[in-house]
Length: 117
Length: 114
View 1 (cartoon, rainbow over the protein chains, first blue to last red):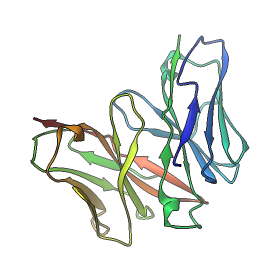
View 2: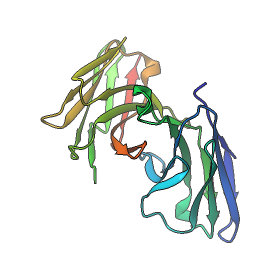
View 3: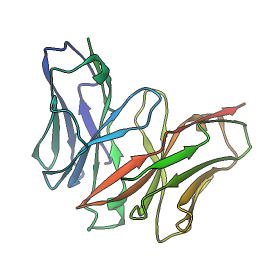
View 4: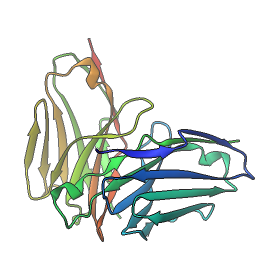
C-alpha cells in the first residue's frame, strides 16, 4: 500500500475563515511533507516533518500552520489566507532514509485544491 | 540552496520516437534525483529515480543518466506512446535528518502526437 490520503479534495474558503487540510499515511513512513503547487508550476516545499518534529520551514507565512499529531497524520491549519494562496496543496511521505534504499522515494497524495475568495 | 534547471519547457514528438529531457543542479550535496510524471489534475507520480552512486538506470522504455561531475541528469523515453503525454518534473534531493529535501525543476510538457 503506497497510499497517502488527503482531505478534503476541494476547499473554498473566505479570507476570514479558519480551515484545515488533513493528510494520513499508514506506510510507517517517518517523514511527511507539505508542498504547494500553482498551475503549470512545480511543487514548492513548504514544511518537512521528521519523526513528528518540524525539521524544515521554507519561510512560509504564519497564516499556514502545520501540525503533526502522530506519525501517521499531518495537518495544515489555514487562517486569514489571501486569494494568491489558492493552489493545489500536496502532502507527501517517505520512509526513514536510514532504513533502506526505499527511503529515497517520496509518495504524494492526490492533493487538496484550495480556492480563497 | 539547490537550484534545478530543466529543459525544454515543451516537447512534441511523434508516436514511436524518443524524447529526452535534461536537468542541471547546483548543489553538490544533492544525491538523489527522481523524475515525476504529472497528468492534468493528478498528483505527481514517481516514474524513475537515480542515486548519485549510479550513472545510469533503466526501466523498460524509461532511462535516466547522471553525470555528477557536470551536475546534470537526463530522462530518456523510447518508443513514446500517446499516454506518455504529461508534464514531467525532475528533482534534486538531499538528506535533511531522516527526510528528503527535494527541489523541483520547472517542468516539461511532453506531447506525443499520434
